[in-house]
Amino acid sequence: MNASSIELLVTKTKDFSLEETLAFVAKEYPGEVVFSTSFGQEDQVITDFIARNNIDITIFTLDTGRLFQETYDVFHRTLKKYKKPIEVYFPEAAAVENLLKQKGPNSFYDSVENRKECCFIRKVVPLRKALSGNKVWITGLRAEQSENRQDLNLFEYDANFEIIKFNPLLKWTLQEVEDHLKEYSVPQNALHKQGFVSIGCAPCTRAILPDEDIRAGRWWWESSHKECGLHSAKKE
Image (tube, rainbow, N blue to C red; front, side, top):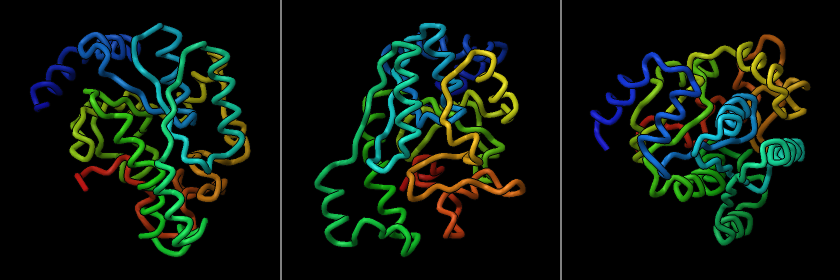
């Protein structure tokens, strides 16, 4: 994969709508385009575009084993609405068992290093498996979600996972996301109405206050960059 591949995507799709761009990418890399969903608002918008337009893009999710019941509920409702399979990737059982044996079930509260270790086992390793053999990874990232994401591009090369990353909602506002969900009656996580903007694992996510940053509810007990390793800019 090289810069010319990304340049081609940028050039060819510059005047395309979102659904036209998704369709073009799927046609350009048949069977090699995947979309990762955590069933948050942004991801539900992309799922709706893919399913409603019958675009040949594989949708997958990472089940860390510690998700909210509300997340499973919207997963179930999404399957029923769109009738499109969603592949599920779990962490390796032996790695989780060893982590709990050595450090207990709540080691992520003790240090940033421990939290990143848990994220690595439960998210990063399964993600590598899900992305393996594919050429394009579609995400629901938006620039306004965090300071770390404001420098992202619509198409870019992710050296960490050695894949082209496509961020179709990069310039969308939260209001645009919510408007789309309402217009097309897209299933939503019930936690969004309870102050949860960014939703991850249950022990690591809380609702945010009116004036707090969107990512403030994730790993609220630490003062890190609020990322788990899935969207790191550099190769680790």
